[in-house]
Image (cartoon, rainbow, N blue to C red; front, side, top):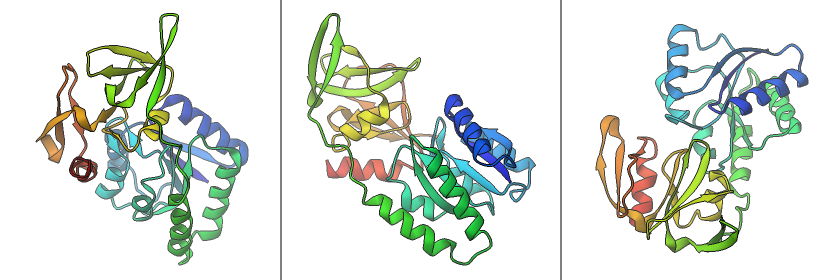
Length: 255
């Protein structure tokens, strides 16, 4: 079985490749792609039916992997591996046959491969996939919180969510930027923070989580993207990819 991996985290890609080959010794990883751009370049030079299945993350460093499948005539079944369940219906609208939430385990990968073998060439793929993805949408989220604990020197300090303008990653370190200008190192990862504060913060991309009260305005950017303007000083540009602009504007209007 020939497999294409689309994953921008090197350790996750390596773990996924090793896990798949342990499950089935006949599996060949024919390509490991780390971005939307790299994937589009790859498919421009290779036939989309060269592989039997694609295992793909959704949120990549330069956009969502859905953009890849919108721009090519993909005929390969896709197994999405992601930390988020809000993309499940969009995954169904591609050739998604399964949707595995990270951190993945061997059982989930085995089930996806078994599903591929059973459904390959079957007209039942769509009904089976839709049923599975709708169940995912009903999974409970982490309980919402109003504050977060941060280590500042030798102290453990609670920081209320309304004090935080945004979270961001820099050099693999997660920071909170407060409205008072303080920048605090956190031990939590961005995926955990998103789930903790999903009713208050918006995941602009893999690097930024922004508080609604920190958004001053948004302006049109290249290629139907949006540039976010903040109420607090921040030197980096925060860009909303074109596939997220609808969700972002809806979030602005509803909060």
